[in-house]
Length: 438
Image (cartoon, rainbow, N blue to C red; front, side):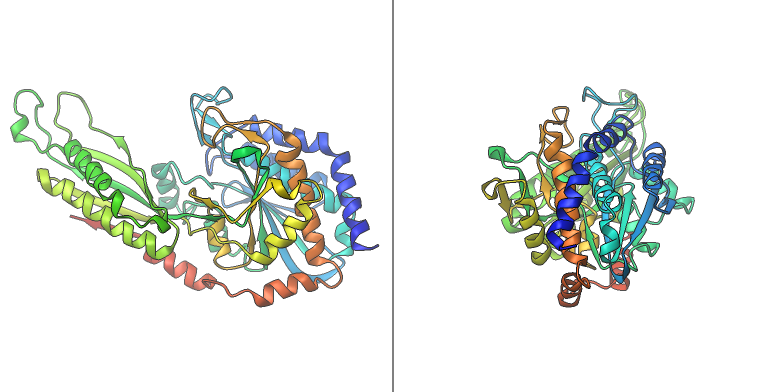
């Protein structure tokens, strides 16, 4: 069968299964859970892979799963990813009892991944390709609940906060040559897709300001106010903002997670979490030094101590021009070229950036939603654009890569120069883990 006929067959199968794919999206959306807590979604997706006749490895990186579809012969191995976790937004109308909700579009990603799998497997197109396709339902993309995840690390259940980082560490990507996934986005001007975006990486920080308790009314002079130290530190960070280079897109956004114990005791134990985001690793490291100085200065000003726990966050998002071009050609079968934006900035972060540093990666942003990500206004507006069209374009891209001896995939793999080897990546992650006491 010619490549074009194979693509048409896959697209037809996806269209015939659009209700099934929509049900998958709705089911995951209706059962939100935060990272490393997605037991329901992980089992549900694993069962759906089983329904396709695929062998499934369950409970990888705590709640994730992996299924593999084999082509007619050995060849390059491609990973298609979808993320299982939700975010916290208690004011969203669909928020669960704990405030979690899929206001990040990850339920759309799962639907795209499953739609891609249905298209390739149910059509039997995979049997005419040279290579393998691995489907990963990945936990914990949102870098949140740092105390909870620190507890999982202490128990030996995980080593890293991010799901893809954990899977890299455990060797699940050792046999993968190319990775791909998408993310939902609400683009201005009713544009429908963003291809070739560059995104920020970051370092994560937990901060503890250590003061001295005292009666807040009778003897405040005998205490050391750790909350004042934290407030000064935040003001110091704000004073730095004009010093960050525009090109680095630096973002620092601290929150105070504990402001004291009771109102009539001078706060002696105040906790903060923050990211330091930037466009390049060097930019992140430079901004991080400035932020640490701000934290130290806030503590020093009131005589408090400070403990800074630095944790490896995510690496900046990179794009692969060859993969972007192939995906764009396939996407244009369904989306006019004038509705596709190329090469713009995305100042958020994703652990797909970690993968893109060690292998070729494809990470387009697709519309079909309204409202901003992570807000009460987020909702799915156009299900066809949100997950059916990207599933078709993703499956067609895989056919381009693995058809006729997988020469296209071989060419991309052979011409790719990784920013880091896996060993260098893990060494870097180790270097980013430190505790600073002042």
